Every structure is written in structure tokens, then in C-alpha cells.
Length: 164
Image (cartoon, rainbow, N blue to C red; front, side, top):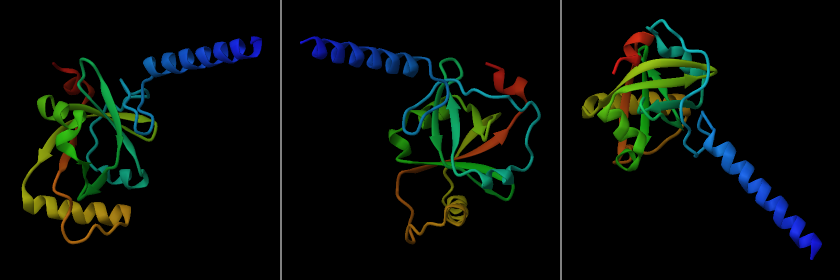
């Protein structure tokens, strides 16, 4: 019986530790959403996002008043940065970005303030699908899935991103 009690105590302590770590998290961890992204903030706007081709995954933080961050893919096209969201209509972060486009992006260990603009033009989307396929080397057939929301991320100065 003593062994079962100790096992129960250890399990409880592990569960409490995991709950505490989850509550105090900043960056997202895999599929688990995070809160405010941690890292040095780049204060000058970025004019060419092609350096993001070196990063397979990035984090996107939305909803500045109550930060919500997720891990996602990105790709650069003609110097601009794009972030797709498969199943975008069902994701919280996409709706947060539409209602308040001020976002922060964590690329590598740095955080970049940006403005997210949803791209709905079918012709523009086709070029973006080709750019994404080139970076991630996948062949999804001729037609991309229906519910992909696509955002262009425009870099801004820190003070613009912080404005209400």
C-alpha cells in the first residue's frame, strides 16, 4: 500500500508540474498553443523576408491583449512573407488575425512585429501555392485544399505593432 501511495504522490506532483509549466509557457510547443513569444524583438522593419527560407517552422502570435501563439509554416515570395493555414476557418489564430491584424512572428530566436493581411484573390493564391511547394518540396496535386487561408505578413516598426 505504501508503494501505491508513493506512486500516487509522484503522479500528482508530475501532473502539477506539467500544469504549471503549461500555464507559464510563452512560445507554442508543437501543436500546443503558446502565449506571448519570448525573444529579442527586431525594431527595424524587414524589407526582404527571403531569409525565412532557412526556417522550416515559425511561430505566429496574435491577439496582443491576450497573446495566443501557434507554430506554422511560412514561405517567401518575391521578398514578401506568407503564412498559410490549412483548415483556416476552424483555427482561432486566423480569426484573431482577421479581427486585429497586429501580429508578432518568431523566426529563429528573434521576434518580428508585423501586420497580417488575408489574401483571397485566386490568382495571387496560385502563385503562392507554387512558392510553398517549392520550399517544402511537396506535391499536393493540381488543386490545393479548399480551406487554406493565406496571410501576407508585412513588417512594421515596433511602435506601430504596439499601437492599439
